[in-house]
Length: 321
Image (cartoon, rainbow, N blue to C red):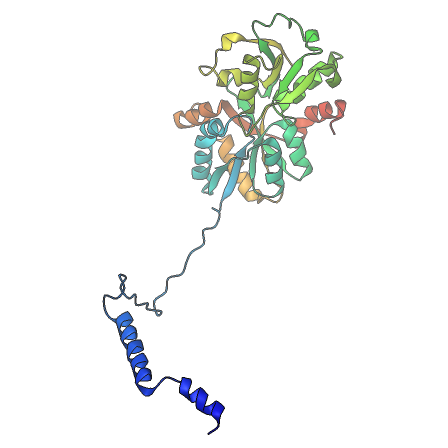
């Protein structure tokens, strides 16, 4: 054996040291496997028993939406009895959904996420271009099937005595797609020779929802000189704000009332069932009367697309097409 091999062999542990190392490893291994070595018990898994995980899916059914002129809470309170009645009368799984803005409402109808839309006639014109079709319109609790815009200011605003005084003032409206809260008033000013550029500012109420209320509150707070709301809004807010501080400066001419429209492609049999259930509502029936009263309605009558041509004429006059 050479010198290098003898030196390498001399560096290897002897048999006694090897046996000692093996014994220590065995002791440590047994200690780790002994009961009580860990605080946690051994968990035995039976792979023969499995449970499938169910992924939740969106609730199916016919969707119904109220164009969000009021808060979601108000929209629900006004129409949830109607939705429940329609579901029971038709046997269809109707449910109310709540878009946050007018624009979102329009997009959801186009995408098939809203089947039945309760909307103003101005928004309906846009929906009709997407293929939606009106099938019913409302008669308000006042007995009228048409409505107007109210131009309001603070009762102590001495600078506003006539509509001509609105020139150069700050105007807050409901939404660019609001009929009573903007379009009708814009047309009324137009007929008086007052154009959009004649106002110091035209602002729109912040959302989501509650836009009619927000117009009234902004006028009350003095943030704007005057505002425009749909007829009937002040009645909705009675008891929530001091209406003695609000003065109605003017009212516009009336246009066809709000309506119900079905999205493009909705089964005609579904639409017919819903329409017939709506037309059957009678204020002489106590149960029906409660539903109609909550919604601020006297009844629901059939509608045709051409019923809303006066609004189309207004849109053309204002070059909003």
